[in-house]
Every structure is written in structure tokens, then in C-alpha cells.
Amino acid sequence: MTVYIDFAVRKNCWNFYDSYGEICVGCGCCSSDPRQRALSRLAVCKRQLQEKIEFDDWMEGWEETQRKNVKADIACFRKMIRYYEKRLKELEGVKKDG
Image (cartoon, rainbow, N blue to C red; front, side):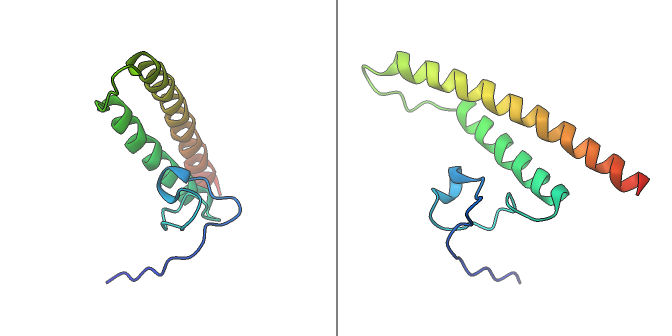
């Protein structure tokens, strides 16, 4: 059984999508272990990308703005996913060599 007691976010909190900058959600995105940090951030990015792709909560009169924002978010998350996948490969190479 895993027990998690919440606390305020760290100064360098990366995952504002879930924490809203208030309560640490224990996601691992601020882990001191670079591999765990990259894995956690990749997972958050993939989940956020899927949420953006599936977005359908359009507000009347704001659809055009929302579509632009969703399109920009999708591009941003795809870029971050590529980065963290590359970063994990680099870390795996270091682990194998080290």
C-alpha cells in the first residue's frame, strides 16, 4: 500500500497542469533522479496531448480562439514529447556506459 501525504509544491514545480502551483501531486516531475524526472514529464506531456486532441468543450463565440489555442498546445506537447523521448534515450545510453 502506498501512502502519500501532500505538501506545497516545490519552488521548481514543473507540473502546473495537475498541481495548479499549489499542492504537490507526487508526479515525479521534480525528482532529483534525471531518468525518473524525464519519465514523469513524458507521461504528463502524453496525457496532456491526449486531452488536447480529445478536447470538445467549445464555447459559443470563442471557437476560433479555442481552436487556435488547442492547435498550439498540441504542437507544443508533441515537441516536448520528442524532447523527453530523446532525453530518455540519452539517459539510457549514459546508464549503459556508466
